[in-house]
Amino acid sequence: MMAQHPEHILLIAMTDAISINELVTSLGQKNYRFLFAGMGEEAICMCKLHPEIELVIADIDLPGINGIETIRRIRQLDTLVPVILLATYIMLETMRLAQNIGCNEILQTPVDQKTLEAIILKYLPVKNTFNQQATQMNHHNYN
Image (cartoon, rainbow, N blue to C red; front, top):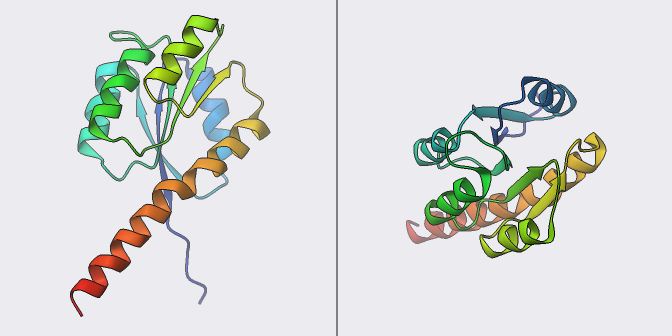
């Protein structure tokens, strides 16, 4: 029997049901498990409750606190989790803010699904590699 690869856990923080459906449909055939948040505050709570989240995709136009502030607060909880910010319009100021708060990528919507998947795959190994090294280090410490 072939061993299954562990699921990658992605948090999607956005309100547009059509965009969420398209995103999940295009990525759903891969080995992902999705957590969803419809508001900035909810996304922050999800990150607190699920430290195993490996990547965050957030819309800049979240209700409540916006995507920029949401990511700023998520960064206070986890400095390693890759974050992709989605925006309908990307102004220079938005790009500066996104970089200053530690966004890994900012993408204009609608996003080409192949591009998004390539970016997701680019960042997923970052936290996994770190976690594997930490696990190996912990394992060796107990032997």
